[in-house]
Each structure stands twice: as C-alpha cells, then as structure tokens.
Image (tube, rainbow, N blue to C red; front, side, top):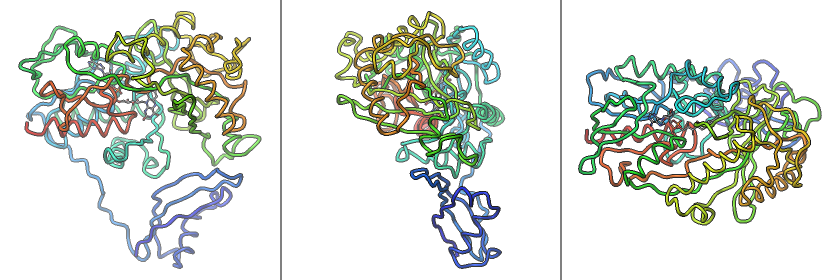
Amino acid sequence: MVRTFQLRVSLKEETIEGILTKKAAKHVGADEKDIVVKVLRKSIDARKPRIYINYKLQVYINEKPSEIPEYVFDYKDVSKAKEVHIIGFGPAGMWAALRCLELGFKPIVLERGKNVKDRRRDLKAINQEHIVGEDSNYCFGEGGAGTYSDGKLYTRSIKRGDVRRIFESLVHHGATEQILIDAHPHIGTNKLPKIVQNIREAILSHGGEIHFDTRVVDFTLQNNKIKAIQLQNGIEMAVNRVILATGHSARDIYYLLHKKEIALEAKSFAMGVRVEHPQHIIDSIQYHCSGSRNELLPAASYSLVAQVKNRGVYSFCMCPGGFIVPAATAPGEVVVNGMSPSKRNNLYANSGIVVEINADEDLRKYEKHGVLKGLEFQKDLERLAFTAGGRTQAAPAQRMTDFVEGKLSADLNATSYQPGLKSVPMHSLLPKLIGSRLRGGFAAFGEKMKGYYTAEANIVGVESRTSSPVNIPRKENLEHPEIQGLFPCGEGGGYAGGIVSAAMDGERCAEAAIAGL
Ligand code: FAD
C-alpha cells in the first residue's frame, strides 16, 4: 500500500536521526522496518515563532517503490539529421536544442558570447576594471543570463508546461536532487556553470553544433520566409527553421527586426532598484529571532507586494545570502541584478524592488519611439545610473530611509556590490513614476515586515532588466505571424520570465519548429 500525507517536524526533532521514518510509521500504524519513506516536498513554516519543517511524504507499506524513472531523456544521434537553427544559448536555446536531440533533429546553435569558462574572465573585468564586453557579460555567453544567475527555480508558469520535466532535466545534467523536493528550489551561481557545460557536452556528443563568439547580425527574407542568417564575421548560413532565443538584453535584435519592419509590440514591464540589507536583519524578521538564525534554517527570504498609485510595487528575484552584480550589456550603462551561491552564506540579502510600467499609460513621453518606447525608457534610466554613479560600473545608491525622506545619504552601508557604490540623491534622480511609488512601497513593506524599513539598507540603481519591454508576436503554432520559419522564443520574445519558463518555452518552440519539417 502507498500513502501520501503531510507531516511537520520541529527544528529540535529535525536533528533526530531517522525522525521521518519514526513519525511516518506512527502515522500509518506500521512497523518502521515495513515502510519506505520518500520525501515529495519540503518547506519551512516560519509564520509563528515556533518554526516547523513541513514534509509531504509518500510512504510505501510492505511494498517497494517503483524503480522505473518517470522521466527519461533519450537523446538521438543527430549528426546527419535535418537542421534547426537556434540563435542564443540561454535557457530557452539550451532546452530547445535538447528537445531537438530527443526528437531526432540537429540543433545548430549560434551564440554571440563565449563558453562559461572564458566568460568568467569578462565578468572579472566588469567587476574589477569596469569594462563591459558587448558580447560577453552577465547576460551574454554560454547559458545566457541563466549561467551566472541566482538559479532560483520558482516559476508562476505552471500552466505553460511541465515544470517537473525541466527540474528532472536539470538533475539529469548534474543539479542536486534536492531541487525536486524543495518548495523553493535553488541551484546557486557556483553550481550552474557545470550544469551548463554538461548540457553543451550532451548536445555536441549527439551530433549537434554550438558556435560561440558568433553573433547573428541580419536575416535574409524571401517572400516572407526566413532563408538565411548573417553572422558578424560575414558568413551567411542558409536556414529553414530558426528559433530566436536571444533574451531581453539583445537590443540589436529588436532594432534589426524593427528596421526590417517585422512586427513587434510594446509590452508592459517593471523597473526599480535593488535593495540590500544585512542578512541578519531579514533572518531576525522572518525567523522571529534576535541573534543569528538556527543553523538548520537557510538564509531567510521575503516576497513583498504593494499597490501604490494604481501600480504594483513588488520584490523581484530576491537573493538571500547573495551578491548584487553589474548586469549591463554595453558600455555607458549601469544595470544591477542579484545572485547567490548554493549555500547562500554571504552576509547580505538583496532583492529587486520594482514598479510596474504600463506601456500604454506611463510612456507617453516616449511615444515617438513607437513599439520600442519601453526599450528607450529603459536605456535612458540605465544611462542616468551610469552618469550618476560616476561613469564607471559603480552604482548610484542611497540609504533606504534617506531615499524616502528625500535627503542625500552622508555615507552608505557596506555592500556586496564589487564595483562600488556612490551616494547620490536617488529620490530626485529617478523618474517620478518610479521614485514616488518606490517610496510608498518601502513604507508599506515596513508595515508588513517590521524592521525592513531601515537606515541599514541601501537602495542601489538601477534594476531595469526584469523582463522584456518588447514582445515579438507569434501565431498559435509559435511562428512569427509575418515571417515563415521564424520562432520567437523565451524571455526576449516576451514568453518567459526566468530560467524555468524560458526552458519550457525553448522545448515548446523546438517542437513547433520541427512540426512539418
Ligand atoms: P537569455 O538567458 O538572455 O539568453 C539569450 C542568449 O542569446 C544569450 O546567451 C545571448 O548571448 C544570446 N544572444 C543575444 N543576441 C544574440 C545574437 N544576435 N546572436 C547570437 N546570440 C545572441 N531567473 C530565474 O528564474 N531565477 C533566478 O534566480 C535568476 N537570477 C538571475 C540573476 C541574474 C544576475 C540575471 C542576469 C538573471 C537572472 N534570472 C533568473 C533571469 C534568467 O536568467 C532569465 O530569465 C533567463 O536566462 C532567460 O532565458 P532566455 O534563454 O530566454 O534568454
């Protein structure tokens, strides 16, 4: 017999060896030796001072669990198979390529950036020398924005695909099985490069191709069908099906499509700042403790949302025990984002706090840019941050309380952001539509989480790349409505908002591109 049920375990009980088996045996009224316990889900309940760990268990009573895996990834030898071209090797491009292998088609991937190892040098140059490479940075290169990301795997896109399949695929390529049971699965920036490398090896060893340092600069169209793509080295490649998975930072691709009069749409998105607290403040609020948190508990996170002047203000990509990183993709701009290692053991907690930007109502001053109005607004804010920060990768910052009270910070709190911070009056620099709502948001968050609103937190600008400000339309069969053979995909198309949703969209686009080949 198999039974599935929830059990809760106190932090004290959690230290007792075999506690789950003991409790499960009692729950089902069986002998410990007659049961096998499988953990399906694990989450922390810290709503009250007495903290519990909640487990969802599957218990086999006098029965052995099935050993047949639920998910099998059967990659074919595709060296002589029909080709699908994939532009961009972020999560969308990677999972599109893997799906091609499963379906027996040959993925040919074109990626402007370098492989994960060589890319690391360029990240060092951004952090230490303030040099931003336009093809190799935190967003561009093998694994895309997902490689040196935080690796949180939560997604709101459950309806859009099989989330579990992506998790299983990540485990297949080297992620820990823990992601299959954690309520808030996280891989960590230190572990992602190896997984990305394993995915690359799977693609190459099955006959797929991946070309790094290969930026796509143009498309050749004939009778509204994509016929060829041009690379920055002058090479032209004949193509039949193209998955365009270039991410939301590939502005040159949006400009190219616009110049070629290929339909695009303006999309609502969100922008704001990144907030950094000492981790112990967030721990003490969330875990109701005064000193350091219980060692069984991970660095605490939070999720906040408020409605201010008809727009949502919310936390985005919260990174407990993490770092703020410079995520610009071109010189002359400052963009911040966040990440954390698998142990989440850094001293700071950071999170984007962003304001919804309504493409129809908030960008009237940018109307002349048509469908690219959001992109131009985003660029202006990033340039502003660059200038305010002192024209390096140092980021403009202010103490949270000074920002709300409208005064320049005499000094700033220590930070994890390597290029450094510069104290500036963010309250007067940020456009009103963002600044005034952030002020309202921080006040509301301080009410929801006592201690969150504090002079010990910095706000750091700007968090501008939360999602794409442009949507590349597609038909029901996922093909662009005007261009036969072109399949807009992932975050750059406006169809994903994170690693998992981009990966699921990559799989879907591969299936769509292959249909009828
Ligand atoms: P991308 O990952 O942006 O990949 C696009 C790829 O296309 C890039 O590799 C780029 O080099 C390539 N490309 C662009 N233009 C061209 C061209 N012209 N020719 C050839 N190649 C091109 N998401 C989460 O779910 N959880 C997190 O914890 C998380 N943390 C993040 C932390 C940071 C620091 C960053 C930057 C992002 C984070 N994200 C996180 C977001 C996540 O990484 C993205 O949502 C995801 O990577 C989008 O996948 P994608 O494949 O659609 O696009």
